[in-house]
Image (cartoon, rainbow, N blue to C red):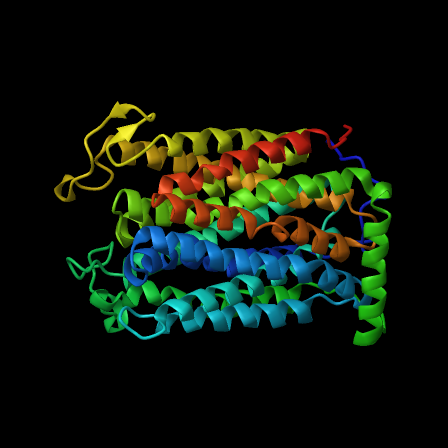
Amino acid sequence: MTAATTDAPPESSLAGAYPPRRSVVAWLFFDWACQPFFTLITTFVFAPYFAARLAANPAEGQALWGYATGLAGLTIALASPVLGAIADASGPKKPWIAAFGAMMALASAALWWAAPGVPFAVPLALVAFAIGTIGAEFATVFNNSMMPRLVPPEKLGRLSGTGWATGYVGGLISLVVTLGLLAGSPETGRTLMGLVPLFGLDPVTAAGDRAAGPLTALWFVVFVMPMFLLTPDVPATGASLREAAGRGVRALANTIAHARRHGAVMRFLLANMVYQDGLVALFAFGGIYAAGVFGWGTIEIGIFGILLTITGTIGAFVGGRLDDAIGSKPVILGALGVLITCCIGILSLSSDRVLFIVPAEPPQPADGLYASLPEKVYLGLGLLIGLVAGPMQAASRSLLVRLAPEGRAGEFFGLFALSGKVTSFLAPTMVAVATQASGTQTAGLAVLVLFFGSGAVILAGVNQRT
């Protein structure tokens, strides 16, 4: 196997042994439980609904969504490394996961009341989305920091990849449930499966789209339970919260002050900061872009999401094994190359052209799903993005575990969240500003090529030995 250059060996179980397989399987259910927030709300159902039905127009919806994403990212950037350091000093991670998971679930449920024509629906949707994002990301910080205690170092890539793939499957099933049973077309009144929406959800008021919020909340509460019940937590250190806070903040300050001692990990975190920023924006605006440029509705975007999630699941499983076989860094660099190519391809599309200059017939309402050439190309590029996004994120997580000093996984996963979020307001905000200034959605996505390219250049300098 390949291993990254480290300043200290990976953290291991305090007892020198790893928990039974059922504990590891239970840990994987966190990704399953949390993924619908990103699948249903951030990308494929609620975000396009917000742009198409709540905002004044899709361009303004994309801009507002970008500002909300940026604000959430800034909050996460400021708080996550400190919280991670405190959790390391106090020991147990589950109380933090429970608190922030509840925050995400409550905010998701609140999206139900963001209905068309309701006063304050737009600010309600934006505030609830931002709060939910903060809760989901903070819970993930503490869940990730449990990884070194679950499997030996040579299996971290497979664990991380399997976790991402499990999450994708959970997101896929939640998306099928939403589109097949809850969200109906305003034109036909039927769901993707041709059924009348359950519970009397009215397609005219987008009740099925809004139901994605309560479904996300319920899904998390039910499926996170195996992790809480079966996966062992880190033992308590005996420190009070105040003592843990002081100890954690001092440890974090020491880490930052002595960053040169962790040269490889700090360079990786810088690269992660840049390319994760681009990925946040890409997923935040993928469905919104399709709704505005091609006029896709919930059904079209939902089927697109199902297909993309399938390729994401395949990519995460394969990527986890590639990670253990060839190393995390090559997996990430290869994924970034594909993302750059896909972004350029998307920029070349409009409703009536491909490759910037090649004319094409625009989509017509009676043509069926993805009938025009630009739609087909966008669909293909989206599937490629799904194929590599999971491996890139899983490999990033496992690379950090290999690089982090022993006993400080939570602190460094706090820095990992910081690196992924410290400028995560920047790419969505730049997309929002460019979209608002130009009045076109395409201009807003041009910045992503720069983020992915810069991240690849920085990551190339991370020293990884085999």
